[in-house]
Length: 295
Figure (cartoon, rainbow, N blue to C red):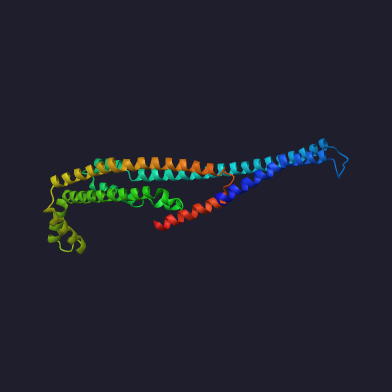
């Protein structure tokens, strides 16, 4: 219903009410004052009393209808507010869990404790961390629809970008710890060469080729260079954590605070007796679908 149609209906309603409240009593009074052409078995006071009862009944019915309508709107508001609040609260928890899973500090501590003691374990830790980063936003697919996606799109994109950075840094660390593992097993590689030379066929062709490649790579490796690169990569983990990870964490808090306020405002609009919740939902859905197409 357009704005002008609502105004016209309100004006007509006021005119009808004015006629009932003021017009009819005046007409009745004037008819009895004229006292011509028609006689009744009741006087003006009885007629006005009857009219007053009818008017009171109409007012009671209107009041009852208005009360029922408002109560219905209030129930719709509370239901809408409860559903939306629970949804956004759940999504906020998921986003915080995602950030917890890609938090590099815990992984970095494990790496620093095991790095040069057990490089194989360190590589496994980093590979597991990479899997967490690459699958970080998968859970959102089960909870987000096309209507809600645009509202948190910037958060999802931010998580994806920072997860890619963490994967790149961890790939560099995996490469360095793999090189350190080669240095650590230098004697084993040499022993394999001696045994293969003494007893040809002791190892498979693939093992021999891999062993030769490791020995060749040993010529370019040294502990100092590996240590320096690992320290630099550790610093990169911390830099991205402090500058981007924390900012994203704050963005999640402010975004969901804004969404919660918007939910309350939208719930309050349901109390407007001129708003049809189903029509409003359809319009909102169409608008969000248009936004989704633009995305």
